[in-house]
Image (cartoon, rainbow, N blue to C red; front, side, top):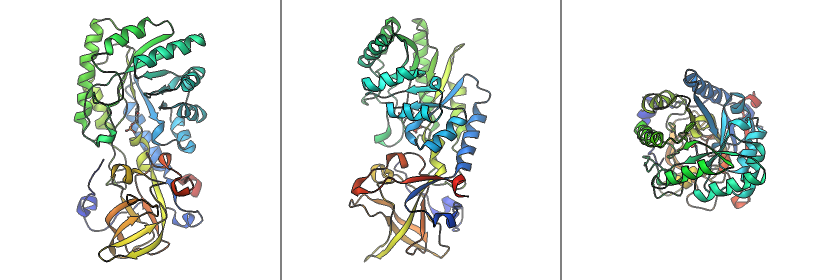
Length: 403
Ligand SMILES: *Cc1c(COP(=O)(O)O)cnc(C)c1O
């Protein structure tokens, strides 16, 4: 995630800047900052995933709601036939309201409250991804009170490090997520024995923004080792859920906007051994929605410092926190100007020195009122917006609405 900005040559093979296409005339009627979602990009991404999975009828995709829960985006994804992966009761409700069928909803999270568990039981969701023995016992108890049987998968911490930012790795033994390898057999035995629990299978999620397929190969190898042991113990594993985490190319939102789903799914087709009747579940978030979204801001001021030039825009870390939180790189374009490029630090108005979108960014010469697009912001953007400094939450517009 803390990627260094790609070089100019790396970006376009020349010094001509390739930009996204935006309905700038319509943008003039809208208050900035706002999120703009290109539904053509989203639909093409969804079609690519569906095409990849066409011949793997035992593979199921659950979109990870936490990446972007804009109801209009959720509707498009549910209409494409995907399931949903949720990490809170609020997300379970958002998924159901957006048309995801309850029998395709899975619910993970280390700290599910009783209220959230009851809500998911009432909806009869497909599966709880359980992260501790303590949680397993509570779900059994709450299901008993409703005279129901809860389907659960156990989230296993595979002790695999993904080569990514330390704040977004989740699969190491020291992380709070999942059940450790030493403890898993005891918890499986318990899950099988509990009367209001239906043990469905095992769940993993090793991190986010993973671009090195070696990490997913390592996950497959670890799962194969485990399922071999489990088969000898005669544990009935109906499903294996490998989580999400496929990364995107933040440097190339214009000509590499479809993530490499083929290489990703091929890792599992080639390396993961499934037994007869087992289903394989995926929970991709970022790779589904990141490239369709941009944060659109207006330039407020150009400030000439002693050794720097600042473009101060009306968008800030309250709309898109990833640069401030993870030092994440986002490509920045001045979509109003064709003038020769100059170099700017692009900053927001919030009273935090981390409210910076990019340092020493080459933009076409920039003036007050120009539109600035911060690209690849469809995932972990709008949903992480805050009201810090009493900012209003940003609105999101689909390209379909602005034609
Ligand atoms: C966040 C999360 C995902 C999605 O991760 P991406 O990196 O956005 O693909 C999937 N599963 C679980 C359990 C998660 O917490």
